[in-house]
Length: 361
Ligand code: SF4
Image (cartoon, rainbow, N blue to C red; front, side):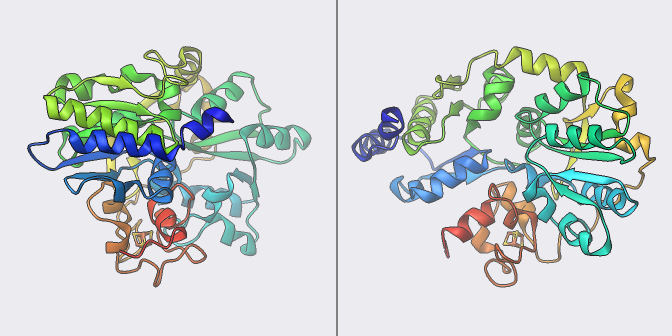
């Protein structure tokens, strides 16, 4: 508790800001983070307003619900309407596919159950062998290990998963290297990097000269990470550093990543509104195909063309190109209680975070 208070201490935050302001920067810099929790901290504590004008904090594609393709939601809906029980996390159930959310298809007879973990879904399958249960597996490398672990435990044959798991480091490296995201430094997500390890971000520093700092989630953590990045930028260095040493290591959680690697392989995967990103999605290996809902039920169809509501600028928000307030639908047609785009659905979505903090400009 004392430690937590320390990481929220105003005097400490102000001292870090003074240090940031004292660093010589030859040009404006953009620092990107890829985590909804970081965005929440930045908005909640007003950290942007503390920084000098030449340092911009932008939010990248760090909200798992936001980037889950509409097609995957449609496929889950299709299964639920066919009579399978689709087990899903609560915020995923509210995200709208090409037409409907999983929550809304309940009124059409779709069987959708909100769960808190994959274990709930496995137990559902175990308790009723006549019921086909599909776990809609959404999330980054933070949630993929639990999914992999339960697949290795040989759940009953009436259980399967619809995997929309994604891998953050590949996505960030690819988006930057292809010029789709502009940044001068990146704050790596503390919890996801706890799993992947800092080494996963090494190519950004080594090959592209982008400094990386893994950060914790308290305001002092984030400001300290900004300082560590700005210092590198001002000195012309690009290294991978660790601000969140109370959780993150260079190697990461090796056992968790080994578990993931036993069950999944990385494949090119679609991120909603953003497109196909090389080696950024976890698909079940062939030996586990009996647990792959897409193969088990012959799900087909790839149509990503109209997966965003007309006017929704969520994809640009997730690439740091516009702010939520620059979307014409923000807080008009699109509000937390009536979301239009996926960034307004999840508590990790930038639009939702800005809206709940009543940020209007
Ligand atoms: S405010 Fe709504 S419609 Fe606009 S970008 Fe955000 S989620 Fe999309």
